[in-house]
Image (cartoon, rainbow, N blue to C red; front, side, top):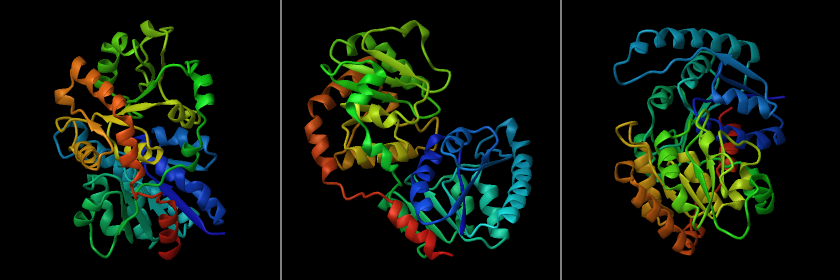
Length: 353
């Protein structure tokens, strides 16, 4: 039996594409193992999927000054040593990396043992972790045509993002039953990302009384971000994180408000859901979400509200306008040729060995 090791972590967006590949990998007869950080979100998600999991030490490599810059390189070195032991122990035929800083020592360890590696870059421009991994990879998959110019020509493959097949099998009625909401009024699903978004959470809660005049709201607000004062508010439900029932919440939603992480927006596109994207500001990130959101807005898939322009009124107007024009957005998404990447990536996995 062939063995594949999957890696990637830090946010759910670094894990869910790996989860999307698992059914096809099992069908193809692979033994699957996962290497991630000791306590990252990836551990819970992967163990819940029944995949054997090994944790390693990980540290973040930053472009800016931080006191942790002195300690994190030692964590990365420790993680590299641990990854080498695991690669030697399991002797995988191939490694698939979704990126994030935990993936760097794993990719380098695979290179040491001449294990072919495929990496996937979700954003329009490669992040630092993937930049460090690209020289060690056989192939580099990406989501956007614009990304190809940043990648080595002989390695780059435009695949799109692997989407979990189960996401497309949601049931609206099951979503309504799970949330105890009504079928009589439209539903907004607010997703701040797996780490939560304090600014999006605050903005939505600030206009909640006005939103609830017309809409109902399902709010996935991130770990530690529940607002106890709003528990029991009619037409409003909040969750820190939703795993398996998420497909039903998507099915129940008439409109989605989301950050613009590449994996999230590719899922929204696959579901053909009208959406308002609030990209993480360039001040708090390297600006990749802004590029992702503008690409989708340019194709007619999304309404974009940049964080710097977000006020109570602009957010309410963006949501109201998008809902009123929901058919226009849905029609544009129906014309998209961005197909599920699972089949293409499976072919690459089998070809590089």
